[in-house]
Image (cartoon, rainbow, N blue to C red):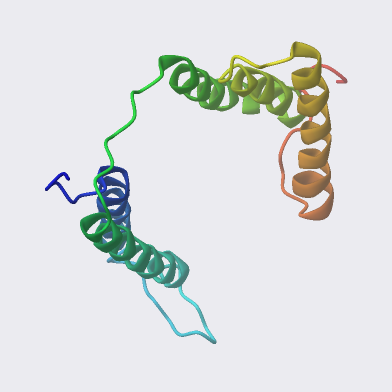
Length: 153
């Protein structure tokens, strides 16, 4: 029987949540809070940060009392694909519009797994892009370009 009693993935995840929540509280310290009836710009970030602190404490505590779990080996393919997909969206969103950037982002993210089927990734990307346009542009009326500016202009 091992004397090591730390579940490292839970423990480190809890520390990460505590770090993010603390950073949020520090970053929003000068924003007015207001009240629940009249929320200021700092109200929701702080409420969410406090909730995340609760989750962080839960995971740290659970990591300390659960049996030993090592940290799994980092696989570079999924890490690279997800970072690439975020970068693709950041670079394309304003230039190519929501429809194209969402489609390309989902296709790039699909390559995080070896089981990717390119046709399925394309179909799913187009479907999610259409739903994104419906949600953000049609339903929420956000001023997000759907297509490149000079495509239909």
